[in-house]
Image 1 (cartoon, chains in turn orange, green):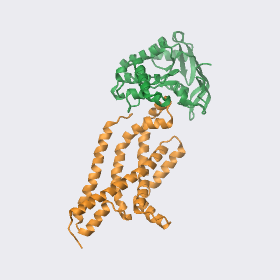
Image 2: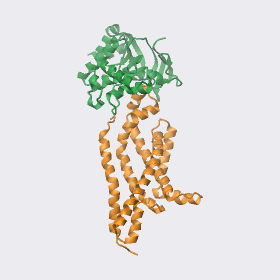
Image 3: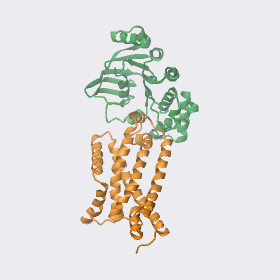
Image 4: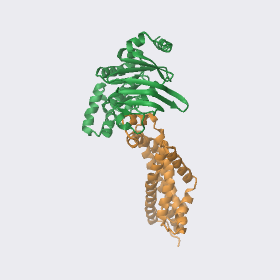
Length: 216
Length: 243
């Protein structure tokens, strides 16, 4: 049953990349939305909100990503919720991403000097308006390098979804290896494909970083 | 009622008392210089007037609004009370024009065309029309401070607060900022200035207030105040800053 590694395999691998991108995108959307909330609470002047945000981050980060995936896939199915792998993976990665993004963005928010808040406040802006027009645009620049760094991590970590049966790039690599028995060639291709996703992101973050101005 | 009226104001940070029973009245059109050693509560006093710092006791009335009352609409008040800070605090990610139009457009809902006219007018008053498209980091300290003044002016404030606005400037840049203040004074703006520029205070202010140990220690008409200080504390302060 062992066959040669062919152009078709290459196409399958490239095709599987889209599931890696798809999962990353879903995790970023879900994780980003919750992460924004966590960051806003974490940078709040209200102690209760800060403790809640901190508690969430510590709790999520204290549990391995793989375990989160098992919880949402195997755990929930025992409780009667049979989630398809891609949904379980989306929830798991979203939870994981929300804690890291929340913490990164909280750091960016509190890095903007208090005087910028005051300048906004003293022309009559509300808290939300200060955030939207003054703080967030500046915090974005601070947050770009670590956020992109995290996205690169996230892209690579989506390979863990292979263990709950989600066929993305790594899983496709395993399947191709099983058929061709050429692990070295196959995984080199897989590695090159991951690199082709991650490298442009890193470059892009450098460019964005140079374009924005921020209070020091 | 006076435009600004402080009655027995007390401000504490934890156990440290910064303002102790401060009483102060400011009439429409008055120019008041507040002087004193660092830590005497001058800046805090200013910040209490537009509600940047809540007070622990006493009353702060500004233009009929009870600033000391947490239920008051401070947002509406702050749109009428301009404040300029020692460190300029321009928004570095926005152009000069946008720095100035942000308040009028968001707080007052002004259309962008009108706001742009307003920005040009405000910049003209501080003599910086040509910098309308610049960013803060392309301006000198003096220019940044003048833009900060224009940003406040664009809100058409009924009173302006200045918190040591020349203290962070190189000596050769102080003059251009003081000129702008003098022009505003001539136009009849009500102004409260915390300042270390004694000559400027003597020349421009109607009244000078000396703060010491969190209290209004002595106050009086500018000429008289500098010519014949009454308390020993003011005498020793004046001699230390004027010689």
